[in-house]
Image (cartoon, rainbow, N blue to C red; front, top):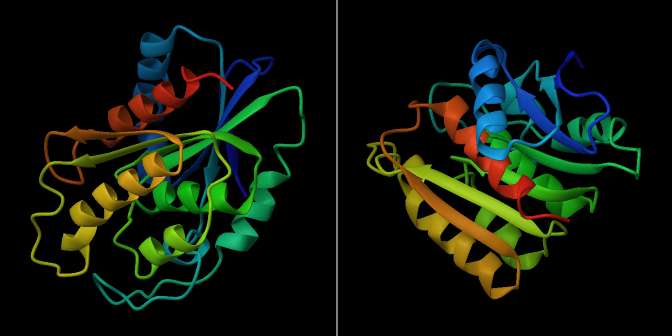
Length: 209
């Protein structure tokens, strides 16, 4: 896994973010935005994902756009990421955008490594994920959720459920005592993803341990 580091190597707060090439292009803006919002020292590890649909998916699912189906590589990806989170003197946060945001949520159900989850426009439309959340308990103390206000207004029937499912996810987490917020952003899924991700990380960083 190719890893790019941003920020302060000695920081106590470490942000873990699965990324693709497009994310890396906007990472400078994201890092600056986090700094401006929090004014805190942090290290961000950008983990380059080679096969997005396969490596971030918790289980197999049929294609919902295009022809590429979803794999079940999340367990393997989490194992690779966890190897970089062994220093217990540091506080780890996991987050990401779109399917990486879904992976971050799922990962916090699988391990207690992460203090907070920064899920910006997460793909909670993913088949079966709402049931997974109902049947399991998250191990992170704080969760940030967000969605663009036009994301549920799509002709794709599966992806159009994202609004209903993120509201449901937020309510479920709050009812279970998780420190959770849901922020609505202007625009569709492809607007300001680096700024949305920065706000997600900044929120969980400020919630403390």
